[in-house]
Image (cartoon, rainbow, N blue to C red; front, side, top):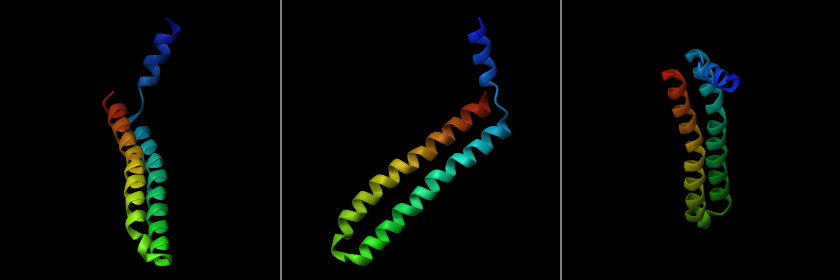
Length: 82
């Protein structure tokens, strides 16, 4: 019985807190994307013939990083709707 009560209390999240949580959660992917593209620019400047391989790696890691931000956005809407 006590587990059910705790689960109900955990589901009641203030929408403002959920928004702040998403904002803080989006900082990580934002920094990650900046680091990814900075590395591509740096690598291309050092070795221009490797640009194709660097771009493939960059887009792959960019997508994986952005998925984290999208998951956070979905969780925000779930918390906001509850």
